[in-house]
Amino acid sequence: MPGDITNPDMRALIVLPFLAASAVLVLPPAPALAQGSAILATETSAASAAAITRLAERLARLEEDGLDPGWYGVPAPETASADPARHRVETLRAAQLALSDLLLGRVASLRGRVDLRRDPASVNLGAWVAELASASEPAQVIDRAANLPQGAAAIKAELARYRAVAAAGGWPRITGDLRRTLEPGTTDARVPQLRARLAAYDPALVAGAEANNPAYDARLQDAVRAFQASEGLEADGRVGAISWQVLNTPVENKVAQLRVALDMRRGQGARPTERRIEVNVPHFRLHLLEGDRVVQDMAVIVGRPDRQTPMLNVRMTAVQFNPPWGVPERNAREDLLPRFRRDPAGMQARGFRLYQRVDGEVVQVDPTTVDFTNYSRTHFPYFVRQDAGDANALGRIKFVMPNNDDIFMHDTPDRHLFRRPDRAFSSGCIRLERPMDLLAEALSGTSGWDRARVDRVLASRGTVSTQVARSIPVRLHYTTTIVDGGRVIMRPDIYGLDAQYARAMERGAQQRLASVEGGAVRGTGAR
Image (cartoon, rainbow, N blue to C red; front, side):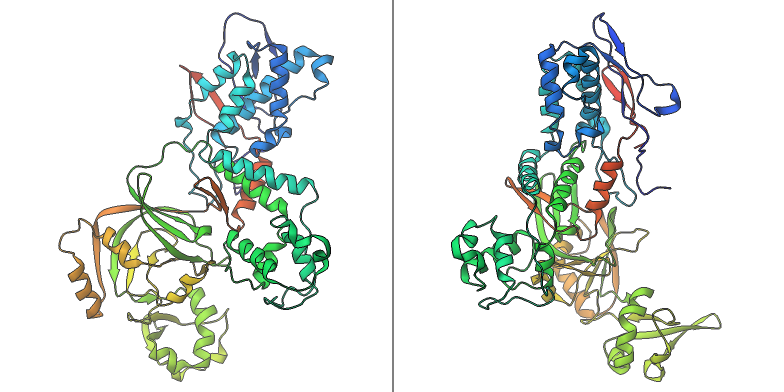
């Protein structure tokens, strides 16, 4: 089964409602329409020839909206005079296909992306199609649909800026030894390249003789810090391997991310109104929300790229105090085995217990008696458990949200990591900056639990679990581009999911079987 539910051989199908008795020009159907039985009919609309020309011109600018005009068969301008009737029909058909993607999104679903929100029922596609057919200025219908998603105007402005950079040839790539950190106040042959790269933010960096100045001076340091802050990096002015990598990210990647951001916002429907938790993985943030109101906002640590946090829609159902940690096999082999080799007694002192199955029974093994050099990442016949306590990797609180990936949210003893702007350090679970704050909300309404009892249970060091009275929906989502106060904030595509989505957009051309009934469209077919 493919990784996305799209069909590159299918064309979207929208049948216009019949208007007043008027001539209908039926073009040969787009290739490979569903079951070979559908006919794509385009009505003669109320638009004048000049309005159809303006519609064709608007469709030719669909790149402004993150779409490719080539996906929709927008006719060439010269066909308007060579074959006006065909130009009219092809333009209206392209407009219908583009309208569908603008309203519902080009990519409806991707494997593993349960975080994608699509609510076709919230879009009265039939009414939009009818309006497109009857409008004297159908280009205005396309404009309204394109600007419908929340934050679309700001994202489109950012997209235009990056597209202009790409059209001018992109930004210069920095070469040299990029493993070596550039320190503030030093002189370095890479500095002129850095100046050229950041000149888009501060043209004075390359004015006159400054263009070849190898000194990493205060003004350039300020530009670097501003760039690092905008990219979610540690804004310390030190240009290390990560900063060099981000500086050398092609502008086309930014363009693709913004196109994805626009498409992800389409056809979402109304936001939930109930109390809920949303974790934005690439932004490393957790929000506890009631409607649109942010009740809590905290930093989180998520899975590193080789141990990604999966996207989930689950419910938090229970809380565990002083949890032990049953170490996953991969963590035991890759992370703990080297530590057992170095200091088995120290691992034991930190609460790590080693077990082995012997004749069907689980037996605890003294790690100081094991020669760990005999074992490797591919051969480690033990399993590991860490006792509850201050050194436990889960900290003092675990928030249970049943799922097939064994993902949960928890406290952590490694509090210093929250000072880092990039926080993809875990093995997939979500570490919380302020677990006690979330605990107060989780236990709200749960009989017999108040802060005094919580403190007593934590102090006891005993493992205690309790169900919460009101389970809380939890959504782990992957949204690299957000709009905050009209400002577009982008974060690196740490898991490559935006790139995957962009490829699905290119494959696109999904089949949408839309039957018009009472002005509403029911069913969106295989997407």
